[in-house]
Length: 181
Image 1 (tube, rainbow, N blue to C red):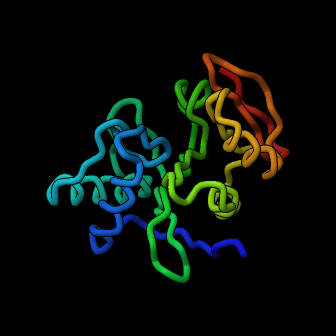
Image 2: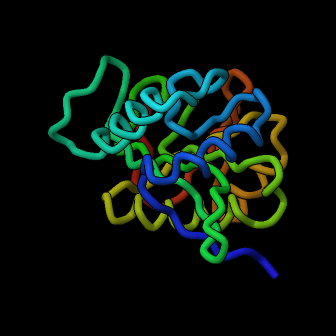
């Protein structure tokens, strides 16, 4: 039976669950998390507080962001029954040049021990509903060309492959006009 998940805002009250999730990645990059350096996630108390605060501030369109960053809704993927943190998902409110070419509107990462259980598919479905509420149509979702699991997840969600750029598969979901560089 598939796990039921929910998406929750980042919170320092989930510090121990966050650390457990980060440890599961065992030093591999954590894409889609909103972590500025996915190879070096914040783990110290103060760094995690700063990370959570920044992610929550990015949701507010009045927050001034650093060059190259866009407003974004970051969520942590939580098992609805056990409250275990299963990963990260982020919905960027608009595309800049980098996101149009490489990152897309939605990025996600599921902890290695929870993969192949339908978690990414369920999280993407919820994030697509959030994107619709934000008026984003169509939604661009990308994955590494060799990431077959993510590829299947995006295609299952209705993603239509536009092209592959610099090792990234670029999929569009939705009927609206596609932006161009």
